Length: 608
Image 1 (cartoon, rainbow, N blue to C red):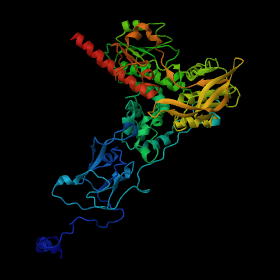
Image 2 (cartoon, rainbow, N blue to C red):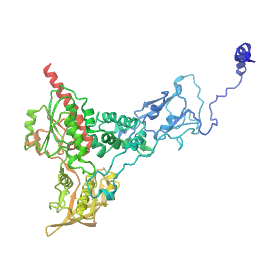
Image 3 (cartoon, one colour):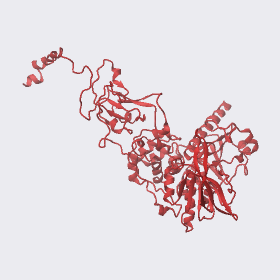
Image 4 (cartoon, rainbow, N blue to C red):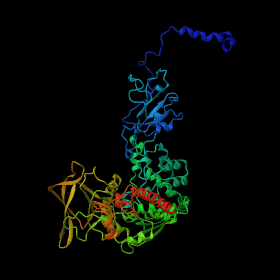
C-alpha cells in the first residue's frame, strides 16, 4: 500500500488515468451563470458612479494585483475628492482575499459570484472592473461591504468644546483640542489615500503627519507639517479645511478631522523643539534682500520661505503687532493670541526681521523700498470694510465688522450696546455678532444680537459650525432680509429697517438681489455692524506707481506666481485672492518661489 501510494508502479501509471477524460464535454464551456455561495469571492465588480479613484484598493493589495488607470474622459474634481482613474485587476496576481472591498471608502468595489474565464491571451486576465462583471452575464454580487466586514471607522472623534454658558462670558478659546486617546483613534481612521493633499491649496502632507501621529512620533508630525505650513497653530484652528471636503472617508461617513489633527502635535510638542525642527533646514548664502509689506499669512509665509533659503527678509507692518487679519480680524475665542505668536516666533527665528508700526506710504515710500531691496512683496490684506451705503450709515454707531474686530482686539472696542444688528451672513458676520454678544455679557447685559442675511440658511457663506455656535450663544439669525435704512431720531441710532429679499443671484449666478418692498421689518438697535465684505487699502502705492501698474476693475493684476506688471513688485494674499488664510499661505509660497527663480536666475546670468 505504501509503495503504491508514495512511489513505484502504481504511482508511475496514475497520470494515464487522465486519458479517460479526453472524450468528455468540458465543464467550463460554454461560460454561463452557475450558482455559487452567497458571499462567493469571484471576479471584481466596480460601480463607476460611486468610485472616486482614490486608489485605496491598490494601496492595500499586498500582491500588487491592483493598479490605477488614468481615464481622461472621466470627471476630475480635486476639491470634491474625485480623480479621473479606476482600478484595474491583474488576475495573475489576485488571491481574492477581499481586502480591497473591505477598505473601499465609497463601497463601489465588490466581488461577484462569477469565477470562470478561459482565454489563451494573458492580457484578458487584466481588466477594468465595471458593474457588468467579467463577461456581462449577470452574475449576482458576492463578497461586498457589510456591517461586520467593513474595516473602516466612519465615526469622527468629537472636538471637546466649552459649553455656551461657559464661553459667552469671555474670549477664551472655545475648541479645547484632542487628548491623546482621541487623536490616536482619529488618526487610525485615515486610509492614506492622499485626496486631502490634492485638495489643499498648500498641498500639505496630511497623510504623512497623520501617520506620524498614529505611530506616536509627534516630532515627525511637526516636521511633516512644516514642509508646507509655517502657520500650523493658526491653521489647526481656523483653516477652511478644504482637505476635509475632499476626504474619501466622508463619502460614507464623517471625514477625518484633518485640521484638528494638525493642531494636536503643535499643542503637544514644546515650542523650543518646534523651533528647532522648523529652522533646522535653513540654508546659507542667499544674496537677495526682500521687503514684504504686511505681516499677514501671505507675507509671513513668503518671508519664512525666503529666509529658509538664506535670503535677507524684512517685513514692514503698519499696526502695532504682526499677524494681519489673523490677529486683528479673528476673535481670540477662535484663535488665541499665544498660538498665533508662537507661529510668528518660529518665523522670526528663521531670521526674518519684522518692523511693526511702520506705515508704508507714510513713514516710508514704495520708491524707497524699490531702491533698497531686490524685490518687494505686497501682502496688505483686506483692512477696509465695505458699507451698504444705505441711509444712515454715516452715524458713529454704525461701523464695519473690520473696524469693530480690530478695536476689540486692541482693547479699544465701542460701548457695549443694549441691542445690536449685524448685516451679513459670512464668517466675519458671525465673528462680529459673537464678539458683540461677549461685549454685552461683559457688562452684565443679556445677549441681544440679530444677524440679518440676504441669503437663505442654505446659501449662507458662514460655516455651519460658526452659525451653530452663534445660535447656541443666543444670537438670532434672520435669513432673507435686506437692509433698507438705519433709523435715526434726535441724532440717536434707533435700529435697522429691512425688506424681504426674494432672490440673491440672477439666472447667471451673479449677485443681483431682488426685494419685496411690501414686506418690511424693523430691528431695534443702538449699534449696527456691517459685515458685507472687505477691501485693500491701495493708497500706500502712491499715484505714480498706481498709474504704472496694470489693473482690472480695481483689482491689481498679477500673473500665476503673484508678479505684477512691475518686475520688482509681487502681490499675494487676501488683497489679490480674497479672504482665506490657507489660500494666502499658498500664495506666499508661490511668491517666494517666483522671487527665488526670477531674481536668482537673473543675478547668475549677470555674473556669468
